[in-house]
Image (tube, rainbow, N blue to C red; front, side, top):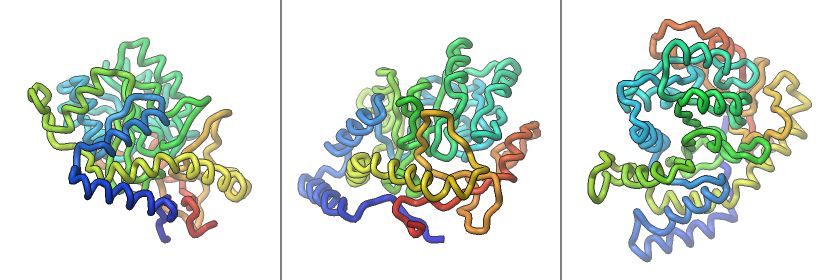
Length: 324
Protein backbone atom coordinates (compact mmCIF):
# COMPACT_ATOMS: atom_id res chain seq x y z
CA UNK A 1 0.00 0.00 0.00
CA UNK A 2 1.37 3.42 -0.95
CA UNK A 3 2.38 5.56 2.02
CA UNK A 4 1.39 9.23 1.98
CA UNK A 5 3.15 11.98 3.93
CA UNK A 6 0.88 14.83 5.04
CA UNK A 7 2.48 17.71 3.15
CA UNK A 8 0.60 20.21 1.03
CA UNK A 9 2.06 20.99 -2.41
CA UNK A 10 1.31 24.68 -1.98
CA UNK A 11 3.59 24.73 1.08
CA UNK A 12 6.60 23.81 -1.07
CA UNK A 13 7.07 27.43 -2.17
CA UNK A 14 7.31 28.68 1.41
CA UNK A 15 9.63 25.81 2.36
CA UNK A 16 11.97 26.56 -0.53
CA UNK A 17 12.01 30.21 0.52
CA UNK A 18 13.07 29.10 3.98
CA UNK A 19 15.76 26.83 2.54
CA UNK A 20 17.03 29.61 0.25
CA UNK A 21 17.28 31.82 3.34
CA UNK A 22 19.31 29.14 5.15
CA UNK A 23 21.65 28.65 2.19
CA UNK A 24 22.02 32.39 1.78
CA UNK A 25 22.85 33.14 5.41
CA UNK A 26 25.13 30.07 5.59
CA UNK A 27 23.93 29.09 9.05
CA UNK A 28 22.83 25.50 8.56
CA UNK A 29 22.65 24.59 12.26
CA UNK A 30 21.79 26.41 15.51
CA UNK A 31 20.02 29.20 13.62
CA UNK A 32 16.75 31.09 13.59
CA UNK A 33 14.58 28.31 12.16
CA UNK A 34 15.32 25.93 15.03
CA UNK A 35 14.25 28.68 17.41
CA UNK A 36 11.21 29.48 15.28
CA UNK A 37 10.14 25.82 15.22
CA UNK A 38 10.48 25.63 19.01
CA UNK A 39 8.42 28.79 19.44
CA UNK A 40 5.65 27.54 17.15
CA UNK A 41 5.55 24.14 18.86
CA UNK A 42 5.49 25.76 22.30
CA UNK A 43 2.59 28.00 21.31
CA UNK A 44 0.62 25.10 19.84
CA UNK A 45 1.23 22.69 22.70
CA UNK A 46 1.21 25.24 25.55
CA UNK A 47 4.60 24.11 26.89
CA UNK A 48 8.21 25.19 26.54
CA UNK A 49 9.88 23.20 23.77
CA UNK A 50 13.36 22.06 22.70
CA UNK A 51 14.00 20.65 19.23
CA UNK A 52 16.40 17.72 18.87
CA UNK A 53 17.59 15.52 16.03
CA UNK A 54 15.59 12.50 17.27
CA UNK A 55 12.98 11.36 19.79
CA UNK A 56 15.75 9.25 21.33
CA UNK A 57 17.94 12.29 21.92
CA UNK A 58 15.08 13.99 23.71
CA UNK A 59 14.42 10.87 25.80
CA UNK A 60 18.05 10.52 26.85
CA UNK A 61 18.19 14.20 27.82
CA UNK A 62 15.12 13.76 30.03
CA UNK A 63 16.24 10.48 31.60
CA UNK A 64 19.70 11.82 32.39
CA UNK A 65 18.28 15.05 33.80
CA UNK A 66 16.16 13.04 36.22
CA UNK A 67 19.05 10.64 36.91
CA UNK A 68 17.40 7.25 36.42
CA UNK A 69 20.75 5.46 36.38
CA UNK A 70 20.61 2.38 38.58
CA UNK A 71 16.90 2.93 39.29
CA UNK A 72 13.70 1.27 38.09
CA UNK A 73 11.47 2.85 35.46
CA UNK A 74 8.09 1.32 34.63
CA UNK A 75 7.11 1.11 30.98
CA UNK A 76 4.24 -0.38 29.00
CA UNK A 77 5.22 -3.36 26.89
CA UNK A 78 2.81 -2.29 24.15
CA UNK A 79 5.13 0.34 22.70
CA UNK A 80 8.04 0.70 20.30
CA UNK A 81 11.37 -0.63 21.57
CA UNK A 82 12.73 2.93 21.70
CA UNK A 83 10.84 3.53 24.94
CA UNK A 84 12.42 0.77 27.09
CA UNK A 85 15.76 1.03 25.27
CA UNK A 86 16.05 4.71 26.21
CA UNK A 87 15.87 3.71 29.87
CA UNK A 88 18.50 1.00 29.41
CA UNK A 89 20.82 3.38 27.56
CA UNK A 90 20.43 5.89 30.41
CA UNK A 91 21.51 3.19 32.86
CA UNK A 92 18.09 2.44 34.33
CA UNK A 93 16.22 -0.83 34.85
CA UNK A 94 13.00 -1.45 32.94
CA UNK A 95 10.00 -3.31 34.32
CA UNK A 96 6.91 -3.76 32.19
CA UNK A 97 3.28 -2.84 32.86
CA UNK A 98 0.18 -4.20 31.12
CA UNK A 99 -2.08 -2.10 28.89
CA UNK A 100 -5.85 -1.73 28.61
CA UNK A 101 -7.81 -3.39 25.82
CA UNK A 102 -9.96 -0.28 25.33
CA UNK A 103 -7.20 2.21 24.45
CA UNK A 104 -4.05 0.03 24.11
CA UNK A 105 -2.37 2.32 26.66
CA UNK A 106 -0.91 1.88 30.15
CA UNK A 107 -3.21 0.13 32.64
CA UNK A 108 -3.80 2.08 35.84
CA UNK A 109 -4.68 -1.08 37.77
CA UNK A 110 -1.53 -2.94 36.77
CA UNK A 111 0.51 0.23 37.32
CA UNK A 112 -0.63 0.29 40.95
CA UNK A 113 0.53 -3.31 41.39
CA UNK A 114 3.91 -2.67 39.74
CA UNK A 115 4.54 0.49 41.76
CA UNK A 116 4.14 -1.49 44.97
CA UNK A 117 6.29 -4.31 43.63
CA UNK A 118 9.17 -2.34 42.09
CA UNK A 119 9.20 1.09 43.82
CA UNK A 120 10.05 2.94 40.60
CA UNK A 121 11.59 6.38 40.29
CA UNK A 122 9.66 7.07 37.09
CA UNK A 123 6.86 5.85 34.82
CA UNK A 124 6.45 6.01 31.05
CA UNK A 125 2.95 6.44 29.65
CA UNK A 126 2.67 6.02 25.88
CA UNK A 127 -0.17 7.62 23.93
CA UNK A 128 -0.82 4.89 21.36
CA UNK A 129 -2.18 5.49 17.87
CA UNK A 130 -2.73 9.24 18.12
CA UNK A 131 -5.17 9.49 21.02
CA UNK A 132 -4.53 10.38 24.66
CA UNK A 133 -4.30 7.48 27.15
CA UNK A 134 -7.79 7.22 28.63
CA UNK A 135 -6.50 6.98 32.22
CA UNK A 136 -3.91 9.76 31.96
CA UNK A 137 -5.54 11.92 34.66
CA UNK A 138 -5.60 9.06 37.17
CA UNK A 139 -2.06 8.00 36.24
CA UNK A 140 -0.75 11.54 36.66
CA UNK A 141 -2.51 11.93 40.02
CA UNK A 142 -1.14 8.59 41.24
CA UNK A 143 2.41 9.48 40.24
CA UNK A 144 2.15 12.87 41.90
CA UNK A 145 0.80 11.30 45.10
CA UNK A 146 3.63 8.73 45.14
CA UNK A 147 6.37 11.21 44.21
CA UNK A 148 7.07 9.37 40.94
CA UNK A 149 8.32 11.15 37.82
CA UNK A 150 5.98 10.82 34.84
CA UNK A 151 7.20 10.80 31.24
CA UNK A 152 4.80 10.99 28.29
CA UNK A 153 5.80 9.31 25.05
CA UNK A 154 3.95 11.53 22.57
CA UNK A 155 5.51 10.05 19.44
CA UNK A 156 2.05 9.27 18.00
CA UNK A 157 -0.03 12.08 19.46
CA UNK A 158 0.57 15.19 17.35
CA UNK A 159 -2.51 17.39 17.58
CA UNK A 160 -4.28 15.13 20.08
CA UNK A 161 -6.14 16.77 22.95
CA UNK A 162 -8.59 16.08 25.75
CA UNK A 163 -10.74 18.90 27.04
CA UNK A 164 -8.34 21.24 25.25
CA UNK A 165 -5.21 19.84 26.94
CA UNK A 166 -2.49 18.59 24.60
CA UNK A 167 -0.37 15.47 25.10
CA UNK A 168 2.64 16.21 27.28
CA UNK A 169 0.97 18.51 29.79
CA UNK A 170 0.20 15.79 32.36
CA UNK A 171 3.77 14.60 32.87
CA UNK A 172 7.08 16.09 33.93
CA UNK A 173 8.08 15.91 30.27
CA UNK A 174 6.60 14.91 26.93
CA UNK A 175 8.52 13.72 23.90
CA UNK A 176 7.40 13.95 20.27
CA UNK A 177 8.81 12.23 17.18
CA UNK A 178 8.84 13.71 13.68
CA UNK A 179 9.86 10.52 11.87
CA UNK A 180 8.68 10.16 8.27
CA UNK A 181 5.51 8.19 9.10
CA UNK A 182 4.22 10.58 11.76
CA UNK A 183 1.17 12.84 11.37
CA UNK A 184 3.52 15.84 11.51
CA UNK A 185 6.83 14.88 9.95
CA UNK A 186 10.19 16.47 9.28
CA UNK A 187 11.72 13.20 8.06
CA UNK A 188 13.68 12.81 11.30
CA UNK A 189 13.58 14.81 14.51
CA UNK A 190 12.14 15.12 17.99
CA UNK A 191 10.75 17.68 20.41
CA UNK A 192 10.86 17.83 24.20
CA UNK A 193 8.00 19.70 25.92
CA UNK A 194 7.87 20.61 29.61
CA UNK A 195 7.10 23.40 32.05
CA UNK A 196 10.41 22.74 33.87
CA UNK A 197 12.78 25.59 33.00
CA UNK A 198 15.81 23.73 34.37
CA UNK A 199 15.05 20.75 32.11
CA UNK A 200 14.76 23.10 29.13
CA UNK A 201 18.19 24.56 29.78
CA UNK A 202 19.68 21.10 30.42
CA UNK A 203 18.27 19.75 27.16
CA UNK A 204 19.64 22.69 25.15
CA UNK A 205 23.12 21.97 26.51
CA UNK A 206 22.69 18.19 26.24
CA UNK A 207 21.92 18.37 22.50
CA UNK A 208 25.12 20.36 21.91
CA UNK A 209 27.87 18.39 23.70
CA UNK A 210 27.24 20.29 26.94
CA UNK A 211 28.69 23.50 25.54
CA UNK A 212 30.17 25.66 26.82
CA UNK A 213 31.11 24.66 30.34
CA UNK A 214 30.59 20.91 29.64
CA UNK A 215 28.99 20.26 33.01
CA UNK A 216 26.24 18.47 31.07
CA UNK A 217 27.65 15.32 29.47
CA UNK A 218 25.78 15.62 26.21
CA UNK A 219 26.53 14.68 22.62
CA UNK A 220 25.27 15.91 19.26
CA UNK A 221 21.48 15.79 19.13
CA UNK A 222 21.04 19.08 17.28
CA UNK A 223 18.33 19.54 14.65
CA UNK A 224 19.54 21.03 11.37
CA UNK A 225 18.08 24.29 10.11
CA UNK A 226 16.72 22.56 7.01
CA UNK A 227 14.79 20.09 9.16
CA UNK A 228 13.54 22.85 11.45
CA UNK A 229 12.27 24.80 8.43
CA UNK A 230 10.10 21.82 7.45
CA UNK A 231 8.81 21.78 11.03
CA UNK A 232 7.85 25.44 10.82
CA UNK A 233 5.77 24.76 7.72
CA UNK A 234 4.19 21.63 9.20
CA UNK A 235 3.15 23.25 12.50
CA UNK A 236 1.24 25.87 10.53
CA UNK A 237 -0.53 23.02 8.70
CA UNK A 238 -1.15 20.86 11.78
CA UNK A 239 -4.77 21.87 12.46
CA UNK A 240 -5.66 21.31 8.81
CA UNK A 241 -4.24 17.79 8.90
CA UNK A 242 -5.89 16.86 12.21
CA UNK A 243 -9.26 18.35 11.20
CA UNK A 244 -9.19 16.55 7.85
CA UNK A 245 -8.35 13.19 9.42
CA UNK A 246 -11.09 13.52 12.05
CA UNK A 247 -13.72 14.52 9.51
CA UNK A 248 -12.73 11.67 7.19
CA UNK A 249 -12.86 9.18 10.07
CA UNK A 250 -16.31 10.36 11.18
CA UNK A 251 -17.76 10.40 7.69
CA UNK A 252 -16.20 7.36 6.02
CA UNK A 253 -14.65 5.02 8.60
CA UNK A 254 -16.71 5.14 11.79
CA UNK A 255 -19.89 3.83 10.09
CA UNK A 256 -17.92 0.89 8.64
CA UNK A 257 -15.98 -0.07 11.77
CA UNK A 258 -18.09 -0.01 14.95
CA UNK A 259 -15.68 -2.40 16.70
CA UNK A 260 -12.94 0.22 17.08
CA UNK A 261 -11.24 2.30 19.74
CA UNK A 262 -14.01 4.58 21.04
CA UNK A 263 -12.75 7.87 22.45
CA UNK A 264 -14.07 9.52 25.62
CA UNK A 265 -16.11 12.70 25.32
CA UNK A 266 -14.13 15.79 24.31
CA UNK A 267 -11.08 13.79 23.21
CA UNK A 268 -9.59 14.59 19.80
CA UNK A 269 -7.25 12.03 18.23
CA UNK A 270 -4.40 12.98 15.96
CA UNK A 271 -5.21 9.72 14.11
CA UNK A 272 -1.69 8.48 13.62
CA UNK A 273 -3.53 5.17 13.39
CA UNK A 274 -7.21 4.22 13.00
CA UNK A 275 -7.43 1.16 15.26
CA UNK A 276 -10.10 -1.54 15.04
CA UNK A 277 -10.55 -4.97 16.63
CA UNK A 278 -11.64 -6.89 13.52
CA UNK A 279 -9.22 -8.35 11.02
CA UNK A 280 -9.52 -6.79 7.58
CA UNK A 281 -7.83 -7.48 4.27
CA UNK A 282 -6.93 -3.88 3.44
CA UNK A 283 -4.95 -3.07 6.56
CA UNK A 284 -1.75 -1.14 7.24
CA UNK A 285 -0.92 -3.87 9.76
CA UNK A 286 -0.80 -3.32 13.50
CA UNK A 287 0.55 -0.55 15.67
CA UNK A 288 2.84 -3.18 17.26
CA UNK A 289 2.51 -6.89 16.57
CA UNK A 290 5.16 -7.99 19.06
CA UNK A 291 5.26 -6.59 22.62
CA UNK A 292 8.56 -5.38 24.03
CA UNK A 293 8.57 -7.97 26.85
CA UNK A 294 8.46 -10.70 24.21
CA UNK A 295 11.26 -9.12 22.16
CA UNK A 296 13.39 -8.82 25.30
CA UNK A 297 12.54 -12.36 26.45
CA UNK A 298 11.04 -11.19 29.74
CA UNK A 299 8.93 -13.73 31.61
CA UNK A 300 6.09 -11.51 32.83
CA UNK A 301 2.33 -11.94 32.67
CA UNK A 302 0.74 -9.16 30.62
CA UNK A 303 -2.51 -10.68 29.33
CA UNK A 304 -4.04 -7.54 27.86
CA UNK A 305 -0.82 -6.69 26.02
CA UNK A 306 -0.67 -10.19 24.54
CA UNK A 307 -4.36 -9.98 23.55
CA UNK A 308 -3.89 -6.60 21.86
CA UNK A 309 -0.95 -7.87 19.82
CA UNK A 310 -3.21 -10.54 18.32
CA UNK A 311 -6.52 -8.70 18.04
CA UNK A 312 -6.14 -5.23 16.56
CA UNK A 313 -5.59 -3.91 13.04
CA UNK A 314 -5.18 -0.48 11.45
CA UNK A 315 -7.38 0.92 8.70
CA UNK A 316 -5.58 3.15 6.14
CA UNK A 317 -6.02 6.82 6.98
CA UNK A 318 -3.58 9.19 5.28
CA UNK A 319 -4.08 12.93 4.96
CA UNK A 320 -5.60 13.39 1.50
CA UNK A 321 -4.16 10.02 0.53
CA UNK A 322 -5.29 7.41 -1.98
CA UNK A 323 -8.44 6.61 -0.05
CA UNK A 324 -9.89 10.10 -0.57
